[in-house]
Amino acid sequence: MTAPLRLGVNIDHVATVRNARGVGYPDPVRAALVAAAAGADGITAHLREDRRHITDGDIARLIAELTIPLNLEMAATEEMLGIALAHRPHAACIVPEKREERTTEGGLDAAGMADHLAPMVRALTQANIRVSLFVEPDPRQIDAACRLGVPVIELHTGAYAELEGEARTAELRRLTDAAALAIKNGIEVHAGHGLTLANVAPIAAIPQLRELNIGHALIADAIFMGLGDTVRAMRAAMDSAR
Image (cartoon, rainbow, N blue to C red):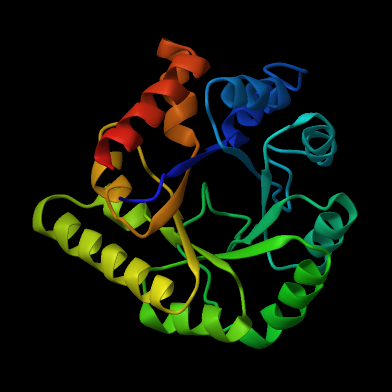
């Protein structure tokens, strides 16, 4: 039987709406609690260098109020390492970050950055924070993750979400092969970016995946469906695909 697939709900864009007006609502922590009550298995939040959505205060409140795991997405910088070590989230996913990008544009070059990443991975691991790397479905990146000793990778599904037809089928095959390779090497596999109710099923059906992290589409659908119902709908779509 295929292992259950966890749903991590990314609440970044609740904070995006709040910050657009510089007011205290909508509250991303309240959104996290609603998502948890609706069946989310974890909450993901990306504390960016420019604080364009999630803030330091949000992270502190999430740590204090959540009863499900928090996955802190963070750039590979000394500032973010210090914040992670201070707050001790359940997990930290190291992601690439460029100030000018609208959203994360691709996977981390773990192979090219291995010397920079190694001491960060060690420090997070020693603090009992579960480290993951957000990478492309590329054997070279998976090999780097193995050498760095991380227990988890998250595969970037952005290309899959944007492609159509045979190109999407080929990208799905890349993701499936990468997941199988990671599992063979003892690494747990997650996936995320660009996933929606309309395109999630083929990704959720990859048997080696253990978790999907989904944010923007859930918050967008919540405008029309309500956040609780949106989380339940995504949970049902993922379960049906398994």
